[in-house]
Image 1 (cartoon, helix red, strand yellow):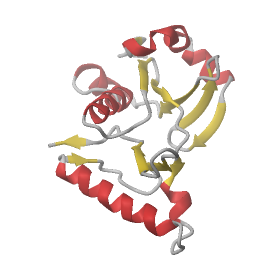
Image 2 (cartoon, rainbow, N blue to C red):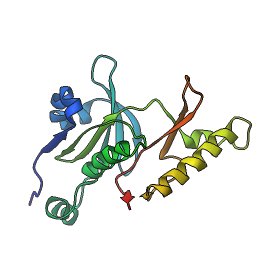
Image 3 (cartoon, helix red, strand yellow):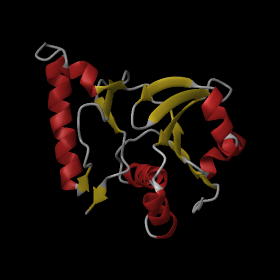
Image 4 (cartoon, rainbow, N blue to C red):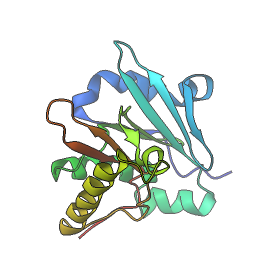
Length: 183
């Protein structure tokens, strides 16, 4: 069988202390972690010490043609997730802190978020508590549009939110960002 990709790792310089975790991720992923989501892709949470939790998304294994394309012509979904998170954060749009991307299979590692999926809130609509969240979300969506950011899978499951305890402001984070476009 033909193998196009070798193990490649890119670790955020701010997360260099997690390099060993990333290097051992293929074995760790199979035998550990808490499953957060399973489907086409699998997402697991790992405690990497000191109360530091990371989320790892393992993308579905590419077929032979996709492996060839990702090796020579296009960035992997994991790498695009990492780079899009870095770019969003540079633009002032929150996304869980990107830690690393890894190719053996395709893995994206980020810090676990303590935000709530918007889908958990919209299920209670309309209620007095949901209206301010949805109004803030509409402003947030407008901000993304004004900055030329197209999520391409912009649904209530891929937007997380929380109320800032100090200011009362509602904050948002974007997840599942590998298919984004920036104008």
